[in-house]
Image (cartoon, rainbow over all chains, first blue to last red; front, side, top):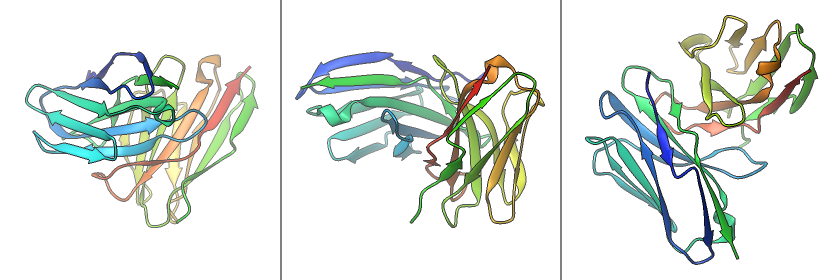
Length: 112
Length: 112
């Protein structure tokens, strides 16, 4: 059974704080790692698709890193804003199949 | 470009009934994946269709089935509904197996 773990489960930060969370996935049979943001009452929205060990991706104040050898990815948010409040999901794409295996997410709340 | 659409958005059924959910992908996307989300669980993969063929299947009982039409629209069917089938059902379309997925708004199914 392929397991994808995300930590922490939830996070409350003040506006302006920087924050980061972790996604752990199997280190073998890796093809890609996806990050999605899911705001309440909306659809999940893709942030990044990462495929190479050592990959770093950035979109505005959000960035992500990838370590496929040890099986983890970090998502960083610099200077959190209330509009960053959402659940952040990672999904592991193994090389042997096209199923995405999602973690249960990190729920971020940013207080003004 | 129109996004992924799902119908209906909400559905209430009783145990033993069957239900059909519909998903229209983004124009040009030939892959459609279906997911189930229940409280406390991550997105659980149901199945993936590409060019009218089921390419991958998750670990769900045979009561869950799907199909894809020549215009890439997809339907999923759940027969003999159980209380535990109450969930948010999301579909996602993607250009091919390696790309980010674009999610629809979901169908919230309640089984009484």
